[in-house]
Length: 116
Image (cartoon, rainbow, N blue to C red; front, side, top):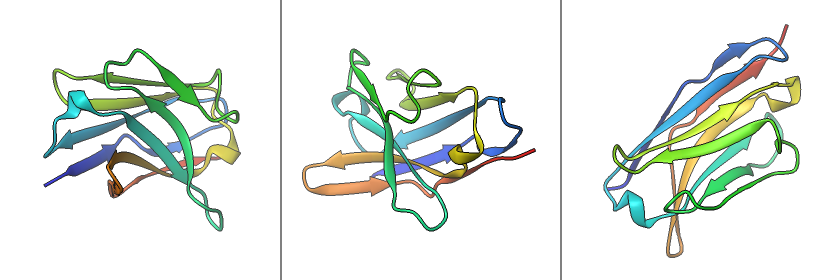
């Protein structure tokens, strides 16, 4: 079955960096676009970034453009989110996401807290 396991979250000061990782299994990773979402307290879950199956195209939410970079390694079934110049408003639980047909698959999420 599909499994997505995020890691790399934590507490960081404003202006700092974190790198999130998502280990994927249970499907043909290299055939699928992968997404990162986040959900802040009291807010709806929102898409942060996506990367196509070969990594040839990426897209970002306006709020993170120029600061976040999504990447993937199809050899080891991993997708990453490099987050730089973090702001307090980036505080959220970050989720790795796969869409297969009409089904959404989610990891358990990893907490990112940006605070001084």
